[in-house]
Image 1 (cartoon, rainbow, N blue to C red):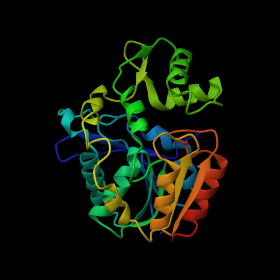
Image 2: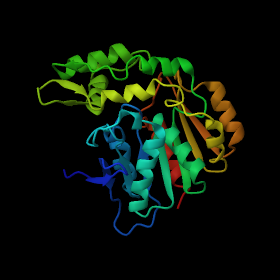
Image 3: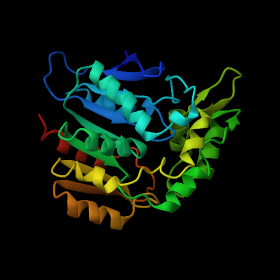
Image 4: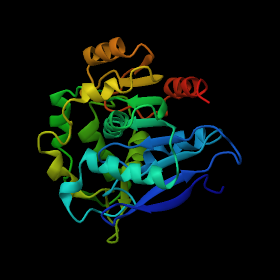
Length: 288
């Protein structure tokens, strides 16, 4: 079966060759496109199933941030910050002449959505935030800091899957080996020496560890730019990054926000859960 997407590239302001998956959608469709933004250590494969699903009706664009997947690694690790990722994505949107769109963001991708909305309000017709909000629990950040940038490699996919289970088992207590294998293949690649390693530049850990980079300040102000925008907030019941109290505060500020909690899952849901997929479709069906 032929892939439903094309591999495309754009160039950042500092000359990096950056990759995105372009799912064209139906020919001649006037539906608003969907922009999918991945998390800190992830890549375009995170949205493979969702993007294929949504592309039945709309164009879907899934960029890979610098230092991830097929995108170039940054020459200066100090550019591994949300502000730079936003600038990179804005350049892509400008080149594609996309002025209004639907945005879906997991974790760091959700932070980027808030920053983009704050900089240019009114462009997003609907938003899905996956296990992220304007207030980030410090215990979750500490947990991420404990594994990001550790350049481990593994001899087989089973070894890789078991290593992920050791690190993330508390977030996905019901995962089977097959599910851990699937997660490994989303997040890792076979390297030139035949071993399996994570598909991102380990140098992203350097700026992440500094205050204000992992969680930009004044995110409540950025969230305010989305007030009135139809929004779906997806939260893992076991999340250590997005608290139930923060969800309540978000709902109070945006009456158009609906929330779905995925049971027995932590940070972050895959967006492939049947109840989440149904909620995303319900939101997008309300948008032209």
